[in-house]
Length: 101
Image (tube, rainbow, N blue to C red; front, side, top):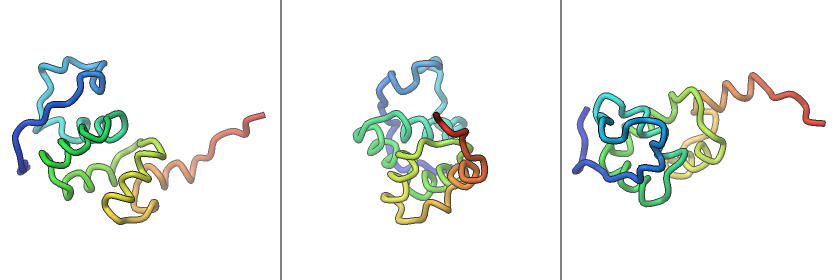
């Protein structure tokens, strides 16, 4: 994988459940990208895009098993694609939630 910039500095609150110091940015790229887009702020997302590049991020997010709906909408706006391009959106549509009473 080719990265386009220096190692990004993310807020540790995004990775509260893992050892932040041992995080490998190359082998855990999918985990990092999904987590930054789901829990990071604008600056975290900018650094992620600068480091991994838009093509790699688009590839990871479209194949993700789960993303929040607001993350999918953000990715659609950034990469100019459709909701149906995202695996997790299609899966959620085929498995609707129970009715809330």
